Image 1 (cartoon, one colour):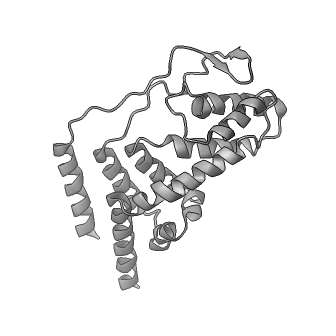
Image 2: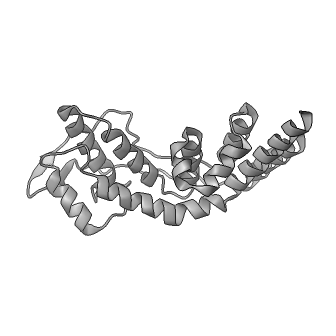
Image 3: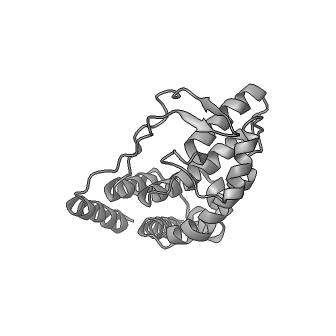
Length: 216
């Protein structure tokens, strides 16, 4: 186990020496006017908790995150292995979602999982006013063609969402959510499993499991 931690620290050190590029900053456009159904509704900028600037984590921060997960002892070999057997299992696991999001951030495609999670949260709401507010937020963040975090969905699905924005419902993004799920499953998930990030997690979780078995 100690050797694996040493190797991880060496990787962090190497990444620190090799990384010199600045983090990317994505800003929202100044306009606040969005057309939904032949009408224009100007929405005020939401609270400052919405990120005006989305920074991409460096390789250093990714490796440090893996080291923190590893040293906290929260990842088992069975848990990490299960992620390679089922994309659904990966998304259901809170730690798995966090690590996947870090990977997607490194690929500049974290809007996909953020949109998927936002849709999941929306479907849990039953208050009409809350649903309307959340639906507008999701639309502005991920559906509007003016958003820097716009997700890639079919034109017909986007048109349907535009029409349904007149009377938002908790399940109005279901078709778009399924398309983004399929996109992540088809493209991002295989790259994640083949990434140094996942391979390092699996290697260290396996080493930890073997070390524990040897003590028993």
